[in-house]
Image (cartoon, rainbow, N blue to C red; front, side, top):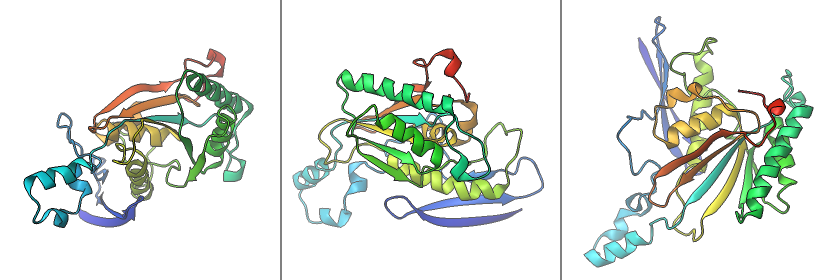
Length: 273
């Protein structure tokens, strides 16, 4: 068995991401992506935003103990991030990306999701903005949702494109080539690092952020944020237009509030799971 390693710079800050591909003859030879999460051992510094990871340690040289503590306190997160992960609506499964537009039902799903989010806004939640995958189906979903949230800031991201995050366990019935996981996994991990983390120290109010993307991306994000084994992502299933909500607290704790909520849709509008 031969081992190949790739180092990929990714995310907002150029982070090294190591991926190992095991090439062999057995079905048990899986594509394995960093990081390997150990269930039951919560890593408090999972997002590298503990104070000691945010400061140049050279700046602490020569400081008194009190000066050191004061500098570290300035790096503490003070508020929580409420992250709403929205799966795009049902779409036409065409060969060309430009033709993968939402179906009529998919547009209805997106509007129902927009109505649900607007209800939350009317109850006092101030959404900070929408980040969305730049693929056609998620772009259209985000645009429809935004009509229910007038004036909301919008921003697209190529990192949030659909893909194969890592080989699932138990294995899916239709195996993808190892290259698909090798290419997509680091990008989706980079998206996780960029968008799922505790608040920056400068943030003074809780934020409520909407991310419109894809089924595989959301499922992988949930596994990573909860520090479950990432290869369990395929054990979940999400409806089109559904809402998955996570809260990242100032101390780094993560709570999954809803997973694939679509209870606001009539039964006849549910697809995708």
